[in-house]
Image (tube, rainbow, N blue to C red; front, top):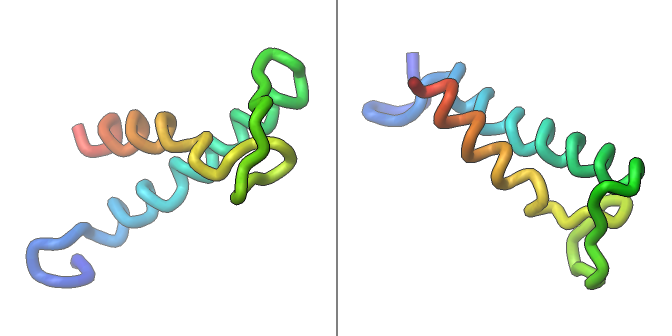
Length: 67
């Protein structure tokens, strides 16, 4: 059952919501370990990681889950 006709199912919405959070968590671990850094200050960041930092993981994760 989807949210509206032709839109994503509840499972797809959950994947799209969880993947950026996981990606942000991965980036936080990398920054803390010292293997990655974001030298420029950002308007929206968490512990030195910009909120868009998990975007790549979100894109890949949602593509994998859709296939």
